[in-house]
Length: 278
Image (cartoon, rainbow, N blue to C red; front, side, top):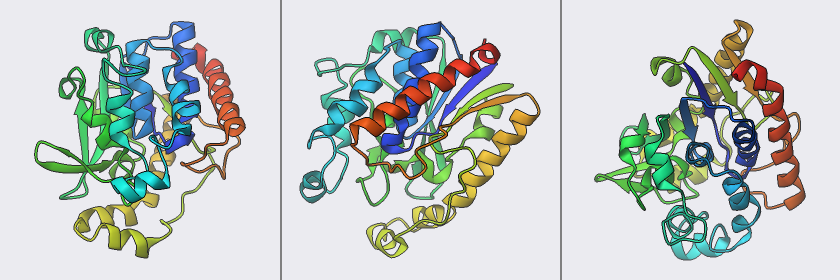
């Protein structure tokens, strides 16, 4: 079974949006989809067959203060207003609703990776955890610790999946995938360093000590995940799709030109991988 992993990365996730749009344009059907953070949003639109939907989120809606702003951080304690993104815009009556009927009827297996607040371990939401106008797992997968308030589901707090399982290779293999398309949003030779601003996030997350420990280890997990992807690619069991540029692009950029360039690069990268994905 072929699987796709999209690791997200805030606004850098537009690279994965370009990949997904190319897959839809070419009619490439990937049965197992695993998204982390913004990657989960990319893939749920891919499953629903909504070409261009994520592109609009990155290039249009993200420019609004309701989407992300210091105002949100002050008044809502969350720089990204995930309720605005995944409820106000995304629900049935929203400006750009998810086609839930198409998503729910799809035979594709979907996983949105999150991090559980109480123990800092990865938590994997699947198709059955979604219902019409309830996209809380997307919020959980994208709730950056210290930047966003945690998402509460079933009495538990969840944070961004990139903390506990930034490149979920093992999850894909355990789901039965024997070939993977791994979508990164940093160049493939990028080596992640330990988190900056440790003092700030340890204060912000003082009620979540296990998440602090997971953040401390995130760089190692990310680098190990990329190495695992490289080994699979060398063995002919994976293809890595990664930008060649954008090394210094942050998860918060609003530069329209930079976003457009990264989207086009993702679209082109998917073209180069079409033969193996088919």
